[in-house]
Length: 115
Length: 235
Image (cartoon, rainbow over all chains, first blue to last red; front, top):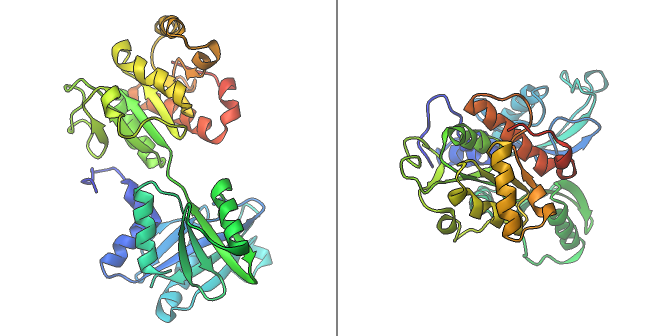
C-alpha cells in the first residue's frame, strides 16, 4: 500500500471489501451488507457493499445514502448475534421501514457478520 | 461472510483474477469460485453465465438460493507521458476504479515526487509494457506530444483492440500523426479510433480540467462503447 497523500482519498479507502479486511486484521468486528436484488430505479447495482464495524463506522454504499442509516442500525444486532438478516427497502410509505428510496425503486440487502 | 474467503477474494482482486463469491442465502455459507474452476450441475452453469455477463444476481440451483457476486479485474489505464495533465488524471482515474500506470522515459518528468501513490515507470513504453502488454481492457492515453514516445504505444494499442485510444495534440499535430500512421500501413478505420483531439468538449483549460475531459471520454468508451464516435472531442 502506498503512503496516504493529505487531502486525497486512497483507492483502498473507497473499496469496502479491502476496508473490511483491514478492519478484521485490526481485530475489529465487522458486518457486511450486500445489495442482492434491485427492482425499478435503484442507485447501486446488485453486488454493491456497505461494511460496518461495531462502533458504527462504515465504508461503501448500498443506495445513494437513503437507507444506509437503517442498515448501520441493524448491523450492531447482526454483529452481536451472528445471525444474518435480509432487509427490504422500497418507497417509504409502502414498507414497514421508516426510511425508503426516494427514487421509487426497491432493493433487497443481505446483512451478515464477517466471521 | 467467511473471513478466510474474504482474504482470498481480495488477494485475487489484487492479482487481477476474476472470481465469484457465492453465498448460500439459506445457511449463509460462502464459497469462492475462481474463473475456470469446474463446478458441477445447474450451479456450475449459472456460474459460467455470471462470469460471461459480469452481472451479480440471485440464482436458484439444486433447490437452493444463492447470491453470486461477480468480481472482474478493473479496467486499466496506461498513460504515456508523466506531464502536468497526468498528475491530475492518474489519481482521478484511480478513484474511478482504474488500474493506472504512467510511463515516460524522460526521467525529469517521471519522478516519484510528482507521482506519489501511482505506478510510475521511467522507461520507454516498448520496455515498460513488455511484461503486461496492452489489451482490450486497457485505455491508452498518450499525452507527451512527442511522436518518438507516443507513436509506438498508440499503434500498439490500436492493434491490441484497446477499448480507448486517445492522443493529445492540436488538429495539425494529429494530421501529421495520421500521415505517419497511414504510411506505417494502418487503415483509416483503425486510425479513426484514436480520440484526437483528446477528451470530451467541455471547454477544459487547466490540466485538471483536461484530465476530467479525458476521464469522462474513457468512461464513455467503457460503458457506452457504441456512442464514442458520436461524442464531440475537444483537444
